[in-house]
Image (cartoon, rainbow, N blue to C red; front, side, top):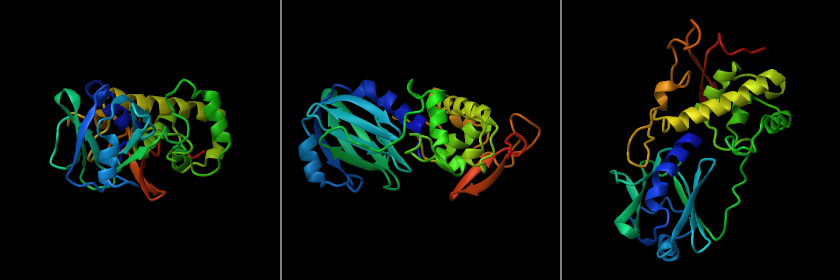
Length: 265
């Protein structure tokens, strides 16, 4: 599933092309990704509206429209927002200036909603915002109990972190993924804060991690998979020590770590 860096990459790529353009018409090859409204009603309400801005909140894209409405897109497991079509396109937005925006999805887990106003998505803080300070992070840590990796992936705890970047952040902090959050020392919390920042910024800098279906808006794979420390590297040499990367299951998710670098105590 695309996480914060992948969705941020798409936002940055599509914004110059579609911001300020009017949605002239909408075509559907399969409208099942549109939720809580019929395609005909969706088309009626959105056609003729203007895209004022595109924001990212956690793993969501929020299209701010001139009418005051917001079109919200979640990519699910394999959804894509594209400037060039692929063979899995489901929705086509015909824009002014002879531009098009495509929503593609091989597995139909992606979702598109239309809200009358800015949506209340009930998400945790954005980890790359200036307001997300070490002090704020420590307060969040102290308020929770349970497994650290599972909590990191809880979108109500921190927005946008999924399986890939949770594993990478924990490795960078030297924290075993089986650790309980209440066992972390102040030093480990500081290292984890830094690890989250570094892992996410690396993902954005390299335009996302493409280990399964993710491609950016122009159809190109991200490059961050070439810079991962542990995710997807079971049995391969650790990049920091002489050990090898291992894999366990936590919360029904494959979890990668280095047993030598990441400590239980």
